Every structure is written in structure tokens, then in C-alpha cells.
Length: 418
Image (tube, rainbow, N blue to C red):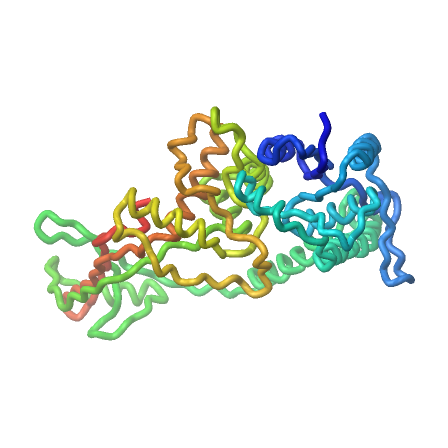
């Protein structure tokens, strides 16, 4: 079939979805990841010449490169639509080199979500390849080699054959060793606590020992505990003080890559690799019956907490119509990114808040549904009002021995509704 424009993406799954959105003038093909890299058999870095990397075509990618070159010759223009991060930018740069594309030409297309609107909008605003991002990726690869290829052979000689030292692992290992030394040097201190079971009428509750005669008291040993219990001569306690307060509990921010990995490990028992693999599937697109293949979440490699205005408007309408106007937070505090965060992307969110987990459950496998539900609920909750709790602190006294009980109940659910 004749085509005017060739679009190169990273994965075949993504290629199918995007080609459907762009129409018959476009042919979308996949590079299947990187096509050039440093050689495995040697360092591949010219240390004497400004750390210049020496790239070669990856073994086994010959047919892919040949096919890409052939397809590029038939096209009026080639667009490079690899992932919107530094790795994707480097892939685009390597492709430009192999296909003899002009680096000054606006042929780089990026989108944070694979939806029809986002893809079409991206093709209206192509840009040149961002060489700063490419340099960042190259610096990472050079450091990988300098550390790994210099230190690993020493490990083989001194410790065990087959071990590898990495740019990240080596530093992480140092932190772990320092922490282990701290743990071993720690001098444990004995401490005791006294818990009380109380009852008023039919209501039972727990309280913890706080102090004696209005002063907080530590319990460093059994003798100090006996000193306290010796003053308890009866079963009845007097309620000395009741302190009531109203407390707000704010929702968590939308997910970044690291917070998604942590929460998926904690709540779903997913390993990091599994979380990223399932997130990649949701990002690249899932077939939703008659709707066709749809990208369900935004790009999953991000350290930004930013949300686009259009996504905010859509989720606000959804919250108001589903839960009520009082649940929608119109003045969501602008979330600060961590220092050094790249703000090119948004936080991880569903491409449409209207696509609830229940609505698309039949199209997802078990793991996809679990992760999508986690992302969807976290995002919707982040745009809702705080929960309001009524808290109560009760001080109980018997012969100068004070116990304190704390309790709370939900007054207004707010984001906890989701």
C-alpha cells in the first residue's frame, strides 16, 4: 500500500494502535527497542578523546535496520516517535544516524498518552531531536561502561567469577554497608509499655500508660513498671480530660514511577519488573472491543506530579456527577515536584477518568485490572476534597496514674469515597 509518511516507534503493539489513528497516508513500523549500542566485547569508550562512545549495530538487528532503510526510502518524510524519555530520544537519534536524516529537521514526535487526540496533536507539532536528552542518555551509558568494565574484572579476581559492578548498584551497596555498620554499632535500650483495657457501659476501648501526677514518664525497666502498677489499687478510673478536634486528611498525589512501584509492591505484591511490564501494556494499548485498541494510561516513566488542565477538567466533571459537587476539589494545591524532577511529562494517570475499572474489567487480564484500578483510584482521589475526621483524646486517671486513649471517626469521607 502506498504511503507518504513513515513513522518509527519502539514496539510493534504501539505501531498497530498509532497507525489506526493516523490513517492511510502513514505507515507505522517498530524499531523493537534500540538498534545501536556500545560493543559488548570491549569498553567501547575512547577515554583519550573526550570519552567518545563507539557505537555498533546490535547483533540480530540487521533485518530490522534493512527493513527500516527500505521503508524510509519510499516515504516523503520520516517521523521518529519513540518513547518520550531520554532513552526514547537516544533511539530517535540513532535512527536519524542510520537513516541519514537531518538533525535540524523537525521530525521528532512525542506524546505522553496513546489516544487519538494526543497522537494527532503531537503530529501537528513535530520538533527537532533534543540533543541535551541524547547527551544525558549517552552520559549514563558511558558511566555504565567506565564503572562496570573497570570494576567487574576486579570482582572476578577477588570475590567471585560472574559478578558485575554497576553505576547504580555500587553506590547502593555502599549505602547498605554503611547502614549495616550503623545497625551493628547501635546500642539497644530496654523500654516497657503498659496497655490498658477499659470499659464504659458496653463500650470497650484501649488506652496506653502516659505518666504519673501530670508528668510524662518513661518505663526503662521492670522496676519502673512495678512502681506504676503498685499505685493502681482499684478498677475505676476518672475521666480527667476530653480533647476534641477536627482533622483533615489530604489525598496522596498522583503516581510517579517510583511511587507506583512502591504502592504496587505494598498493595498488589508486584515486583518492580512486573509493575513496569503491566504498565507498559496499559500505556501501549488494550483492545476494548468495538472501541478498538486504546492506550489506557499516560507514559509510566516520569517523576512529575503535574496534571494537564484538560485531564483536571474531565475528572472534576466525573467526580461531581458521580459523587457530588462537595467531593470535587476545585482548588487542588499545586504539587511540588522533587528537586531535579523532569517536568516534560505528566504524572501517571488514566487517559480518561470516565473509563472506570468496572467498565473495562472484561477487557483486561487480572494483573492489568489490578494495576489500572490502583492508578485510576489514586488519580481520581488526588483531585477530591480532603476527608474530615473527628478526633478525641481522653485522659484517664487513677491515683495519679494517667492513661491516654485516642480515637477518631470519619465525619466527611472526601477522597476516601474512592
